[in-house]
Image (tube, rainbow, N blue to C red; front, side, top):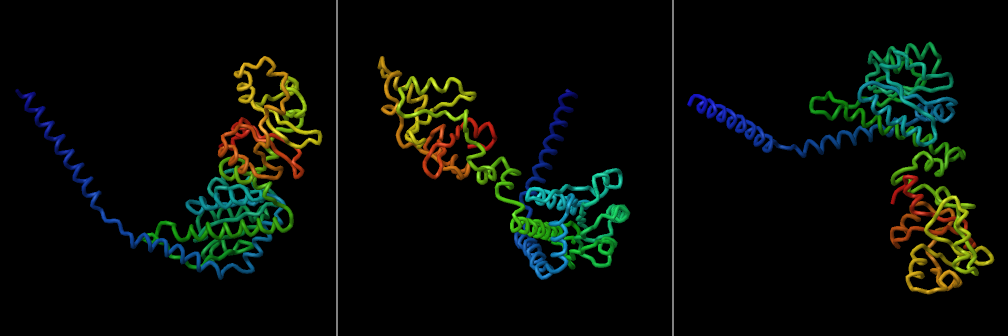
Amino acid sequence: MAEHKAGRACHGVALASRGVAAGRGTARGRARVDLAYARHVLEAEAGALRRLIPRVGQEFAHAARMLFRCKGNVITSGIGKAGIIAQKISATLASTGTPSHFLHAAEAVHGDLGRVRPGDVVLILSYGGETAEVTRLLGQLEKMKVPVIAMTGTTDSALARKAKVLLWMGRIDEACPMGLAPSATTTAMLALGDALALTVLKMRQRSGQFSREEFALYHPAGSLGRQLLLVETLMRRGKDLPMARDSLAVGEALAGLRAMRRRSGAVCLVDARGRLTGIFTDADLRRLLEAGRQDALDRPIAEVMTRNPKFVRAGDSAAEAIRIINRYFIEELPVVDSGRRLVGLVDVQDLLATGVGL
């Protein structure tokens, strides 16, 4: 009986606990979301960006020229949220033709300064410019005679004074309701870093130092890869290109594929001038054999091939090849030149193997 009462008591505690939890959930559910304040945050950060625009002048131009002429690496550094923004700026620089890596301001003075070499340029982000980790780093960089570009909101801080170039952002009020959490300042840093990196990219483009093909080389996967990779980088060519004359018999055309290093599910047919006239696939062969013809392999391949097959031109993007493959449910796509001469074959297996995806 005592055990039964104890059980009921425990059960009551459990119910009470659930009631408290439910009450908390209900209170949470009734919590008011201040949409007007959310819009204010966006306005505050947008305002910070607008106020940056007139500050882009000769110092910015000096910084861009330093990055463009840098013979080593552009090192970005910072601490906390500014450090996270510095990592993103470094990634943008590296992917657009400017060798770059990130140096954590705290780890730098514990050995990571060994990553910095003569010829490097260091871009340091710190809104206040007086963070202990940053000031220690500045002293060491000064000894190493490595030039510093500062991105900061002050003109009289240690960072501002020791920098060769000062990218001054001016006073920025945080959007945080307590005025503490980095928000508008880091947004401004990110935008200013993008402006700097992409301005340097434009300088490289104008001087012929960076092309879309190089950008594609650094972005081989995902949607960027599909948009930028050219079919020439994916297609089978030379000894790997399954090709035969359209004047041969089926058996003769297929016999020529036995010595190929890479098997394909189709053979491309060409005329005497090498121009694409048709394609003969595994499915075409299966249908021919299922028809029960005893002379299936002796028939002229021109009679059973698919004429005027879909194709892409050399110079087209991989994205165009994928679009055609998906639209027409095909697995092999010939590649031709401006005279419709066969120069390659895009095989769906290669698209999957290289990670371009479908």
